[in-house]
Image 1 (cartoon, rainbow, N blue to C red):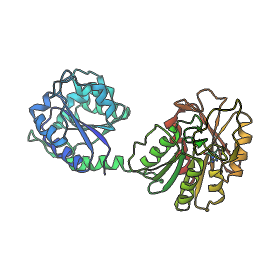
Image 2 (spheres, rainbow, N blue to C red):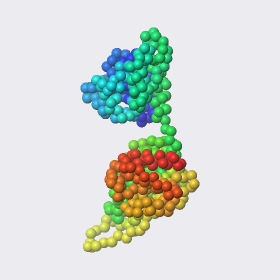
Image 3 (tube, rainbow, N blue to C red):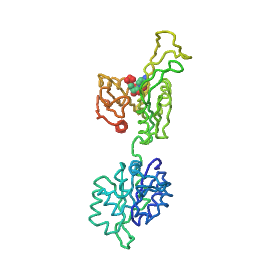
Image 4 (cartoon, rainbow, N blue to C red):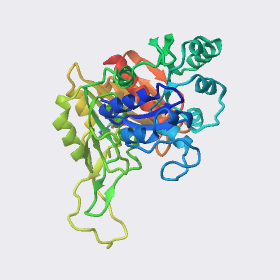
Length: 398
Ligand code: C5P
């Protein structure tokens, strides 16, 4: 349920630290990857060895060295996590989270983390209701830190009231819910084409293009992250999908790509065609390597099938089709023409005249063309964010 999710657990000095052992066990049961950072005060309440054993990872406490005597990099840990949960979070640590007083590894990691952070406060009744604590919690909440409210009951001091850390099973459920996929692409079947095609001239030479295959791979991973069943039909590329659930069909030529699409399109809900397909191929590729004999030589080319047009003319009402266009002039007019001719629902238009767009950049600037002449312009963005804009648009329509 949480497989592939990286959860960093922070433990601070509170008697509730014993509950963290149960929290870690619950997360491991849900197949999460768990790492633990402790403050040195917390190690008086629960042994680092217990938490290392349960989390299946060494526990980090000091800046300088971990159990293996290596430098513990708080920046690396902060960037590693998909979610950082500080449970229990003492009144002292709460105040350091607000002030940024990073005199320990846990707070330094908090300052370096780019992921969502949650805190589960645990303290005595009067400490919890003290204005310092309520003010710190208010500021953290305002800054986007998630607060897992403590519950009421008997406290370690013998007093009765609010201050008990939420039960570990409940925290584990909240974490699972946080990662549950809410996208309406969940369970949808999506076919994606990507990369260049290589059209053989002879057994060693081919006609190709400069497409890196990055767009197809990023799209496939973004769709899988939203819970879709993905088939990626890709031409030759060094890029690799991260999500092992994606079915990758590696092809070389446009005709091979076409066959893979023809075999699968009828069963698909959505098609996203981003491949840079060669428009022409050598009519008659040589069986043996061509020898250099003459000063001039001509290669006769024939037209390749337009795979996207085929999918458009074989599209059922419930199917949704996305195409890409890379234009150098009359962008909107040409894009609109392609949108109509290929029977699309969404065309992602790139202009080579825009700086940072097109081949070989990690950024892209796109315009969406939709039904009823609707245009949506986007700013220059990193490519992975462009993928999410495309998927958000499909979600809105489909
Ligand atoms: O007509 P043009 O090549 O500009 O159209 C680009 C769009 O058509 C892209 O989505 C591309 O993947 C798709 N295409 C295709 N088969 C071809 C040529 C283009 O699927 N033979």
